[in-house]
Length: 288
Image 1 (tube, rainbow, N blue to C red):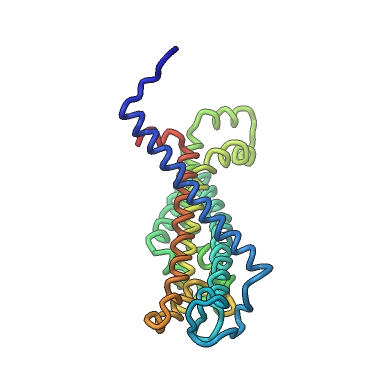
Image 2 (image 1 turned 120 degrees about the horizontal axis):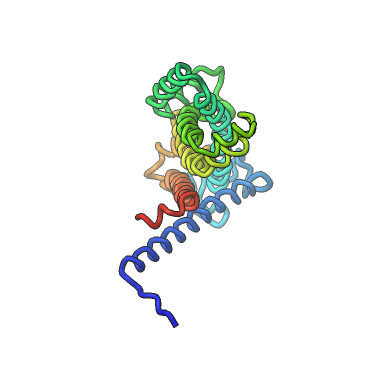
């Protein structure tokens, strides 16, 4: 019978793998928790989100677990709907950003040297501006603020980051020998993109999408806090924080509840993204 020697290095590596496993599980749990709440609000909420079901700024009670806001609306209902708004904005912004960014990134990777340099310079200029600033400019340029406008603005703002990463990854794949072999065998560029490029870049892109997801949620909350987000009845966490700033001392739950909800969702997404990174690169954990 062979005996496996346990060294301090092996024990340390096992602890790191166990920790990453638990953090990934926590991330999945937090994301699924908010996702379940978001889906639940489509069919049921404790109260009508716009209904004044209690007195102004009531404290927690059996009727209103988180109390009421300054208009007498049930605060638990508003925070629950905030989960739906946050996830809807995140998914929508990533979908738009990915559609634009991946397309531009592929075009830049396959373009001529001059066009590639022009697109790369344009992307670097856009990335130099914060996502929130670009989103604010897009919202300000629109005729009126709406949920779709906020999603579109964030998607456009994030597309440059996605495009730049796509361009880099595609150029790396194009240098591989199997791309040359595919071209010699007569495979079209469209077939190469479908069969080789997209399957090879998707693990890294998936991690980036998860990270950009949390950026979109924070940016939307910031837009709503500044009054540039989705209007009522879309009760964004940022709007709830903005409305609660005047009553933070008399009704602190008005600021604590949406803040905690926002932080837990962002932390969950980041932990989930870290787990995806380990899955995409199994050698990453062994080298740390």
